[in-house]
Length: 135
Image (tube, rainbow, N blue to C red; front, side, top):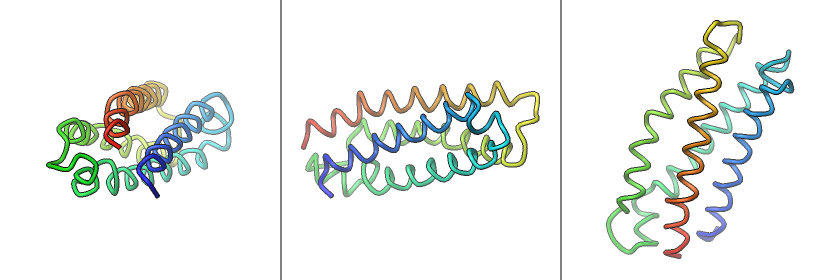
């Protein structure tokens, strides 16, 4: 897979994660009897996506192939910032794997979707753009 295909795959995974989470709350998943399946699917997509990023865009060797030097500072910054989002998402999926009947669910859900949407936008506009321009 060439580098442009990698970026397109990561962007596609971003869209899939956000689509699943936003539609789940609109009544086709988390907010209905199918919520548990939606949470499990979202968790799996999120984990698979993190693995893909770790193998590519956040991988020192892979990134050095593109930039011909040390790990890019932008990628390093994004990788460090991702740790907090990952912990929050993992805690969300663990907390709500059995039930959404919790007083904090709506707030936690909104925070998760908001954090992921902000992160995705930043990655695509800054990190992915920088990566694509170096190709």
